[in-house]
Image (cartoon, rainbow, N blue to C red; front, side, top):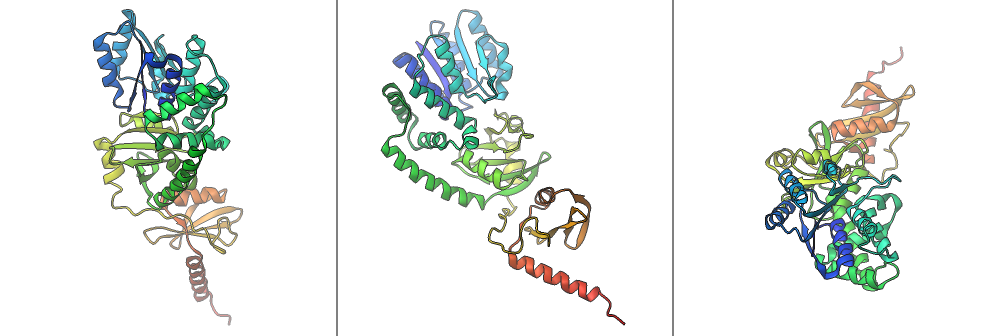
Length: 399
């Protein structure tokens, strides 16, 4: 008998699907949250099932279970832990563990792709074209490579995963992969996925108006409360607000938080690690601890959301040779203007004692330091008229 303990997201359930293809009804599969795995492993070790094979995928164990599993293997037990998260790399010291974040060709690994390859290499599963395609869709979605490749099918697979129960999804996928030469959605699924995309778009538009900017642990963070579509929301908010180091998405009902970043120099798995969580460099999560609650919920609670840049302007445009005006919730106005080949910033009539090589650098500074957005045309015109009037009053009349 085989046992598989895996994560309850698309990548984790993908492992369950390829396990079902390999072992059929001879595998018992348990889908776990990040916090639920250790209890499952502890119970398994207490029963000392040395005649059974244990696979752990897309998750790692705590220190106590790490030692327990190692002793179990030494005494004749059969265990294979397969993961792709950076926070699990320390497990690679064990011969019964396979942790790989990146393939030799530079592509990011997923638990499903690693497990599928392991099963094939060990003669436990024959490769099939449909399964190859399914596994690649899971890998691209989990690593967010689909966004770079514009592989909408990968995103739609994840959307479908959340539209049905795990049991129904597993049953549908196993049946399809056994019977089809290529992986594809059926006609009904295509229709409901089209409807789901419209729903997601409406949800994202609403949540984008609720983002709050705060400074936490030397980072400028965007905070938003949401229970659904964390990956899509984090990605969109990051792209629209590149001045933010990362986006923190709060799920108060589940007492969890997710972190997303679009930047290569930020590793959100390290940030999640502060609160006992983990994940990838650009996508991670953790439970909402008391410390995290104070920093990400209580502290920013009185703050007002930041606004999006005005999009229908004809005059107040970014990089304008006449200058670009920004404003914030504190009624501060920051004016970015070109001067002698550089870009200068004037805040409420006081010119900052620094200059920037590009407009983008100046705007980045204004957005981080002042949580400001591009003002509308009417505010811009009023600002210019006020400054022109001020200049006239200061100019002496000719004699």
